[in-house]
Length: 231
Image (cartoon, rainbow, N blue to C red; front, side, top):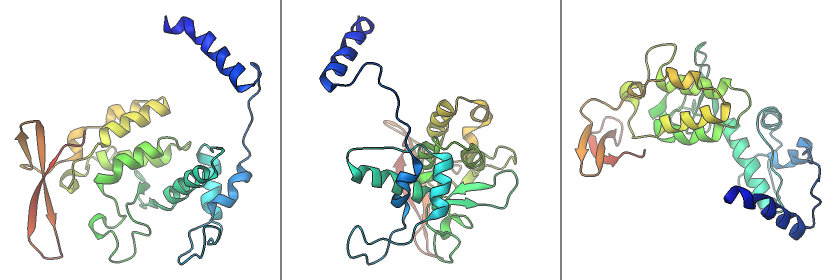
């Protein structure tokens, strides 16, 4: 029944919008979005007071991500900002198997910044967001590398006890496989290699509860806090 109503609804939309039924597609020109790739300027006096153009981020986005046009220019600016920010968090690892990861912090190699994820600033709590956002990236090397990094595909290590938080990396990796149209890497992953530290999973009334071990300050005592699974 729903399928039989589809042409009528489509015709209603065309008539209401005043658009011809055979309207052609309009290809977006990436250069039109280039002004949106200026870096943020600290202490800016207004939204138009911006930092320098991030040319590498724009060239990377032009080659790798879909552009988006909206009548609301604030949405366009936010969309471009997300990809510019994502680009700045792609960190080389200098490893042949997993050459790229996504960091939690900007410039994670600066001493004192993202020390918990040294040397590249990774953290499993944010990895699900990174992978779901990055699933639209055209070049597969970035997300392939990042997923292998967490699961240890190719090196057999995985993150093991380094996973201090509950996460949804497996769900995000599957969403990425759906977009990529390829499940071979996903089928190589082993959720057990994501590693919740042994003994840190306890039974709860509504399902498993992850007991998170954290050091609040350098050399300070480890504290246990219960976190329910985010999956």
